[in-house]
Image (cartoon, rainbow, N blue to C red; front, side):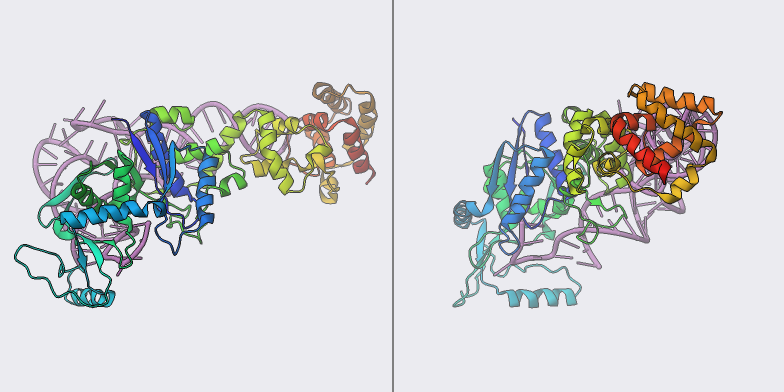
Length: 465
RNA sequence: GUUCCCGUCGUCUAGACGGUCAGGACGCCUCUCUUUCAAGGAGGUAACGCCGGUUCGAGUCCGGCCGGGAAUACCA
């Protein structure tokens, strides 16, 4: 049996972080077992589905690098097939027409609730041996209901949660086609999973309650029941359920915030699944290790601090040239022209040790490309008398210094020694004059990258102030 | 209300068979390195929701409770 998993989002908004993790796990499971991963768009909710959302999902999957082997399939394009199956079920007696109106249903449920009962369809149109059905009313388009088994229970071995069993008595005859003939979600899923030969359904926790119904439908269809694995949800940083208000973050927000794809993937992989103590691993490793047994059943809280750490780990490992390509769009966002200064790769090499995200890296790169304004306050603090004299000398020395980090450093150290100063007494004023700030990479390295001409211009203007 | 799911450091988690000082990671704190700040190195802080039961022994098994979530739609 070859494994076939699927990701089946409904296109009602962007691909959010929870959906991304679900997709990642379903994808990894197929990869792990040499199977296929199918993308299916569940767009039967015509009211809420939009083409923009479809595009957003596709874009998100693409950024994540989660390639599907088949699809995307659209449920709206499968209507004839659903109708065909419904006709078959009507013939087979596993489904039936129900003429109860929505208003009647509401009244029924209200009455049941008033009596403290569980609201459910009472089966008034359900055919039974020896039962006389009501007369078919005029002018009502019937819905089609699934004839759910009466006794016993539905049970399955959930890949994440273990054995789950629900009594059929808890399940009523759900509607599988509306009055206008359009099929409903629980039914479409069954037909799709069946037709697409899905062997493993890895999806969100919110579908646990649908599972017994789907299993019953699948059985009525004579279909093979797939393995189900239900993932618990991801909570926001604050422990609250993710929603629009809570940065219910689209995955596409992550590249915009300067996160690397592999870092996001790694973080998501680790959020709810584990492989012993392993924290940092590649997607190749993940695909070899991933299994259902080590998925946590409980909800996970998203932790941006840890994502930042992981992202930084990845940034530190990325080649400067590659980082240059990655950070370029962020520089553009900040209106920094990277062609107006030193090669970007030299800058990223200096910065990668200290910036956890590409956005921070871009911000930190600013003074390489734009001469910083003199900061009077910092100059006053660091450009003090004993050092000032040495700095004037140093500027002269720099004119003939071989412009490499080592030689620049040697020149500074010579000046420190000659004037009996402490290292920071020269390093700090230089740092402030050259970069306009006090927290930067090693100042000799910065001067080297910036170039002699620009560096000296900045120092002179600082000394003259 | 009813059904189902979930409950280990602040956070992510390890935890086959019941016996571990309950381990790792992020964060935080301390020290260290140092050319500022980071990064790095070395330490430290901190958890089995509660109550019973079974057992020589329970995070692990059983029961109850509490807390959180989901479903109970002609949404998906």
